[in-house]
Length: 167
Image (tube, rainbow, N blue to C red; front, side, top):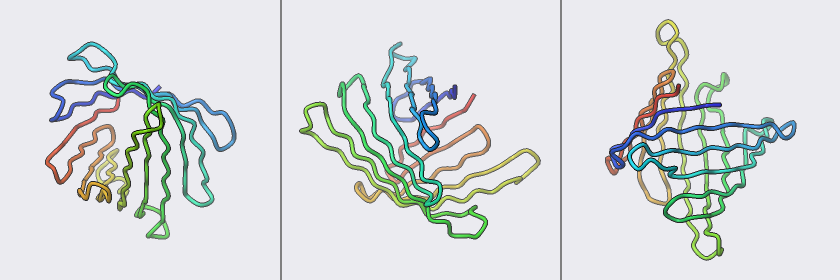
């Protein structure tokens, strides 16, 4: 099980996130994940998703259901396609999309982004970096992520930020 501690400037509370992946086929997994907000002492969301991977074209697709304490149940679809920029695959251009639909299929929310991801191995001994520069094409907001081994820092053009530590 993958677990992490998360804190964001907008929530002002520490959240505990857990994710488990169960193989269900040669290129498919069932992914379960959720988050517990320590301020309110309750889960903020729980998600179950079937994800399909297409390694020969560097793409994946997922369909799932999510429960959160504000919107209750909704369904989601997501897709991602990576285009290697360098021959070694350390720099790539990614396109990703997500669609959330409420349980009555009335309210729909779309997100889409284009991003460059640069993986830098062995910056120092036992230290790897990943830099991500992206642009949310729906909200028209740039974003940035830096990941160093277990630490991840995210920020965007609206001055929102969060930090994550993978246990």
